[in-house]
Length: 228
Image 1 (cartoon, rainbow, N blue to C red):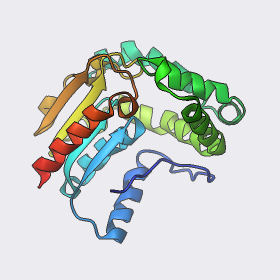
Image 2 (image 1 turned 120 degrees about the horizontal axis):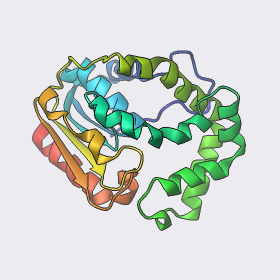
Image 3 (image 1 turned 30 degrees about the horizontal axis):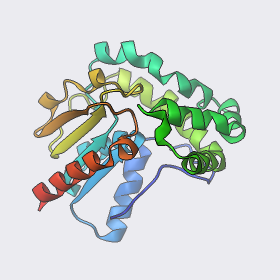
């Protein structure tokens, strides 16, 4: 098992987008000699996972996406929910975003609490660790969000990738009480895939790996068993 993360403490390059990440991952696979594997991604990691599975499906025997809309989400489902991304306005703009991420750790702690169904779930040391990591990677984090604004959003509005079909067996898990990616944004992808199962987890929010780890583990075991 290999656990990757998005850009971290280093100063990011201009290609810090989900367009560049699949290329980086592919290079890692080539270097390591891996063949087919199962990708598990949450939020941004799930967004990148869809791109990878569409770009190089032969590399994957299964895909588990957590708390993220698929590439074929209907505009009439997405547009009414854009307000849910309000928090990105504080972190995506140059200078301002870096300052918020680096100097306002309370904002990170607020988001973590705000985006789970049960705010008492997080322990104080967990919130402190997340906040410290966000502060350390403030420059890279802001640049990641900004590149998404200037590159990814226009491409999505143009319908990039909507003509592609997903051949990788995929399970998409969403939280019933997810206030970032609500269940309505997960509908309609089945006709664009050979084997896509969308499941809504009752009572859960936007952090399924933390809120319902047993549900995530069971979905992973299912994909592993099917991929043998």
